[in-house]
Every structure is written in C-alpha cells, then in structure tokens.
Length: 242
Image (cartoon, rainbow, N blue to C red):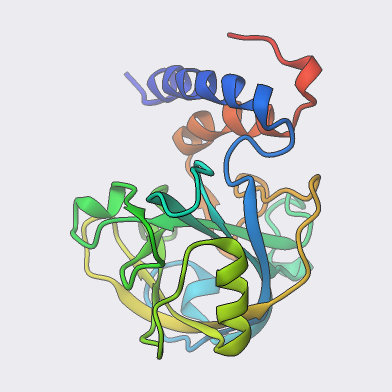
C-alpha cells in the first residue's frame, strides 16, 4: 500500500480546524499577525544534499515574514514561524511550475533528531531551530532545511511590534542548515534580516508551487498540505466542510 491514501486522509483531517479558524480570520487562519522583513541570504556552497540551491554558492535578496502561528494573546507561548522568499531564475524552475520564487516555511522545533519534527511554543524567539518539518526530495533522498539564530546582544521578543523594533536596532542573523531526516545539521549559509515592507493580506507563501532550485516536493507532502493551503486562499463564503 502506498502512502498516498493515508496522507490524503490526514490532509483532509487537518483541513477541519482551518475551516473553523477561517470563520474568525478570513484572510489568514494561522500566522495572522506578522512582521515583514528583508535582507540577504548567502550560500557558501560545497554541500552534498543533492539540492542545487543548498549545494551551490550564491547570494539571494530575500523577503521574509516572522509570525506567531496560533495568534494567541501577547505574552502567551506560541509556535513561531519564519517564511523565507528567494528568487528562482528561469533555468531553475521545474516544468515552469514556479512563479519565479522559492517559498520556504519554517517553525520553531525541538533540537533532537526526533524532536526536530515536533513544533515548540515560546514566549521569546529561541536560540534553537526553526525547521521545515516536511522534507524536500533531492537527488540523494529526503532533505530538511532549518535556520538557527545566532547570538545577539539582547533577547529577541516574539511580540510583533517589539520584534520589529529590535531587528531595526540589530539585524537578525541566522545560520542556514540542511540535514537528512535523522542526520546531523550541516551549515550551508547565513541570512541577515532587517525590517521590510509588510506582506499584503492576499500575498501568500506557497511551498508546494515555489520550491528551491533542484528540489521537489514528495507526493505525500502535497497530499498533506494542499487541502489546508487551498482553504486558506479561498474566500470565506465559498467554504464547505468536508
């Protein structure tokens, strides 16, 4: 038996809470409150992940969005998210599916080889990983991506207005890492972010359509994600429970 029926069933189940949240947050059911960022992503190259974007050196202008996932009251712990958007040249697009960018979605996670798949809640931005959870498919198999914040003078608050003020005073530097699902993290670059223009209500990240150069999504990850992503993009009055 393939994983497709199981992942499709789980994807439909994950859609249900999004239907409820959409009634209260029609534009963004989760990650509703965020901070727009911009900066430079530098890749050092020389890796062996089997994904060109990771293994080849380069500099990319990057837009990003830091957000609190559940949007709980300020001061409460929440899963923190970081979405990165990098340009993809036409030569790096797969079958023309990308619209010219790579959207990489990350969230706070544990630091162990198993806990890296478990989202973690925080009151402040942690020193630990923001991980992709879902692997990309490279030439050699599945590959995870993560960022690890570098030390800074003062602790970075998670409240969006205070976060923005803090990164305006001191840019947010993060190391870029890749790993096989249970392998050690290996650094392949650095990203430095400061305040940027806010993202519009209709401006969406799409990790299913927009992947890094040389990467692909597994079919089972698409089955898991697509029902919720389609729902998040749809107008609220078109929703139908499943």
